[in-house]
Length: 178
Image (tube, rainbow, N blue to C red; front, side, top):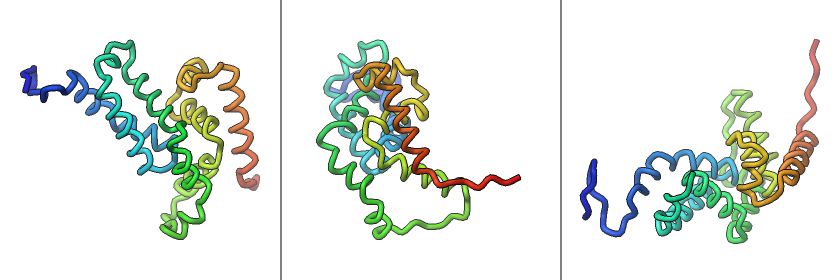
């Protein structure tokens, strides 16, 4: 054990990593859940990313923005080929989820609308979904999204435009009342 202000750090445990995790794990979990529409898969992704980040913490902590670096790791893990099957099972088969755990009506229109929107978002292509989450959930600019997704800003705008068009097309028609 190595002494430090406020407690001890186990030998071999990177300095500052524990504080980072305590401060940011909830935000990383919310971000990952918004990306993959499955909190259990999100927990797996964040856990895997934090294990990798712990091994590289000295390099990550030396960057200008360690949180953004780890957030990009979460995005990359979500987009990675290893998660495609798990994400497809969640996004492409809502009927299976309904049979396994039927939806419980809560009587609140806001919750029903949110659930419907989440279902429509879940079937979007992965990059479009990631771009939407980064724009509207994380409030990132085109440049920031382009850096996270490793693409051009024009591609970000195109992905968001296509995703919004797909969401509009899938949205139920609303009655206009006067």
